[in-house]
Length: 608
View 1: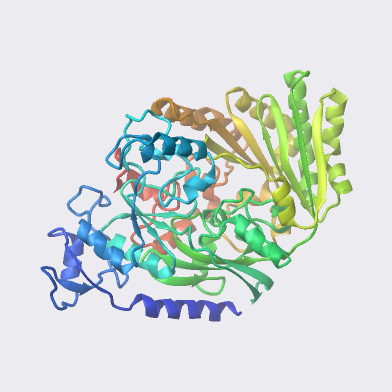
View 2: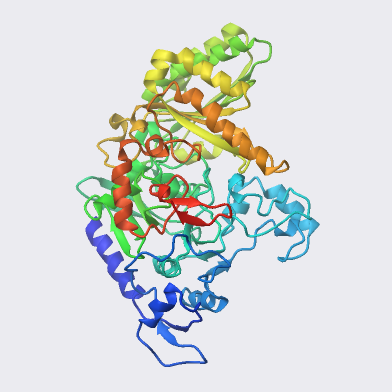
């Protein structure tokens, strides 16, 4: 289907639906901006003791909400229960008031302590399912601020706190548009949440209303034709997980570029932030695959964004980060023919060797990376001060013999030093089969993070310096994940998007993790994150002056985040933000435009 016709149909259908009148009764705080807005609306017949109006958020807002700070629970401007109920009626009962999911672990106003339910919650806490099935829970514990911690005694406080106040379980773009317009009239913070997979707390916020996209699950495939691409494409709604996309594509004999974690949202912050993938060295980043977006902007307008329509918004969404330009309702991306994929794993420890010898193997592995990624393979590895494992290396279109040859420098080095290792190479008929067999499940909510791009030039010219930096980080409590890939223009093609330019030269995307402890004082975890910012991350920054980092896997306290996360694209991204979200209704930590707001001690957002 031609992209223009598709987008036009989407806009016309939803516009007709959105601007239909809905009537309800409202009770508003006297003198509030919303009350004045309602008073200016057309008067209808009175019912009960309230006045009836067409809903005030039926049209895009025309002015900035009043006040220096967002309206917060307890403020006079905060909607009354009757107003929330009225809003709920306009979205067909999809409003959810937050009850923290760990409430059964405490005696609170939400209910009594339940030891059986609490034990079940604690057992499931470090798996993603518990959190992505919740409209309010997130996987980054730092940003919950101990509001309701399941691992503290039952007498500990359990409040909504840093979680959102309400969520809307959206199922169609109209729900999103109405929520944005309601929040704008009442000057309420907006958060966009899909799964809650986020290192920087972007999918939560005190006093916010969350647009919860998790249950928008439609997937379809089209024969796409445009001046930029002709071929198979996948259209995925906002709540589709990468594993959903992989399964649907495989059933069609196709493969799509998605994350290594199966429960990450496919169309959300993952792709909007760039999105590395096991198929990246073959096809490029997830953002490089995007053909068009369907999105609700900051004024509640339904738009299609492609290289030929709202092109600036298309460019911004493809790499400029999620949660700030608009709410993506669906994404259409390239789908590639499925081909045989070879996977490899390798692991060893420092048993029986010196630390110098152990890190000598790491240096050998790093020196081998250019040949590995240039062959079209992508590799994920993890290491501490005592152990190393590749989990996995993914090589689409390569044989087991070719992969063994790529790893030969490492296995030879291990044999030379007498280090025992486990090694497996296997070919699979397609990508889904390799993914299911070799991807490693990872616990969530267990760490605090920092990240940095390592350009190819650093490995080629200063490999010893890189190994020394990694060793320092390991010896000071940091665990490291490396993602080896090539997403240069030679691989990705002539793509036009806003991913950080540093991706194109990167050989390694490094992620540092320090452990998160739920049972110690919160101040200890704040100090641990400060160590990440002030000690561990500078080890890599010194090797990569004027360098960058992947905004989705990084230190949320990164100094100069505008240049580090966005590079030379930031000013243009900010201008696009101002165009499509003129009242800055969307805020997310380190997102484009976030510097205009300062979170207060209680989590309230106020203008900087």
